[in-house]
Length: 200
Length: 209
Image: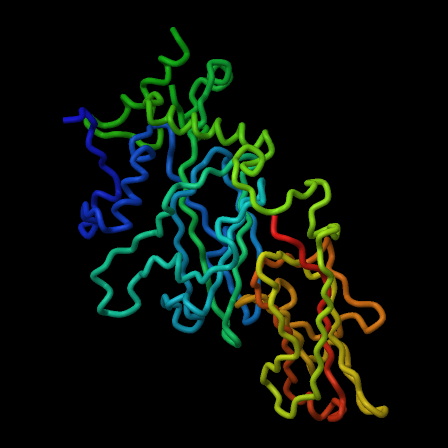
């Protein structure tokens, strides 16, 4: 035995996630073992757009949004969804939505150019035959560190030639918890009242 | 009493056996230190000028960060000025390709200005700006350029092209650039049927850094 404590998190409840050396998702989850064992990082999900549930994208339209992320966070997963404007049901984002994410501080893009949101599609079942499969975010092969000033530029483009779409992007990150020092606690003896996370 | 020890009751307030994940008080472990070390390492890389300045293997030219090649035309750059024109289409509501070109391999590019005009012939009816009789679209690969997916006005003219605010549109090698025009509903009745639609895209290609 290696003396490591078993990891208990959301991935453990996925009955379809099997420890196979030939499955990307299993290996990518294993790549995140350091995050799953760390205690000073907490999950933080960011949605694009952040003000509304979904973003209306007219045909031929490209929009750009900026997402503020705590510097030092690690982006580890992405999930994209596209809704049919009439039925509000999930549809396949291929040939409908293209996404490009660029790290604002360094200008380094996560992808070389716009890519189809199908690559980020969590494959939420839209057909009866697929309902047996769970909703999984797309895992990056290696979590991406976001440094100061800590923001991502997200561009979303409607690639249809005449259809309105409703789109949302979910960015899954791990952010470092705030370490509260003694001088802070002297001013605020009970940080729980402020809704702060505490590490000692 | 130590201030930190005063925080301990936060965990004790939980029912027996429960873990309060919102106010956890666990100290950082070796995995946290591992992640923090990596964070510090990459901060040092950024302070040194980025991965391109500290790692070997750079193939392309090095540009002055104060004069990026998509803002200031470098000496290695090659100018381009692509032009295309078509007769006014006979069908409304269909996108018509006016101009198409591809960025050469190993070069990045920037679009600095463009022209999109309708030229009536012999004193015929011209374009009423903003009417929607003609709609221009600028597309790079599968995506329409932000704010240029449905332009209902003329863009510049032959003597003074329309410049982009804040520089230009950056393109990667092998990117496909296309300029489309659609005749809006009722547009054929308002436009000179012998008129021509002209699109010009100009900028420069530069060796990819």
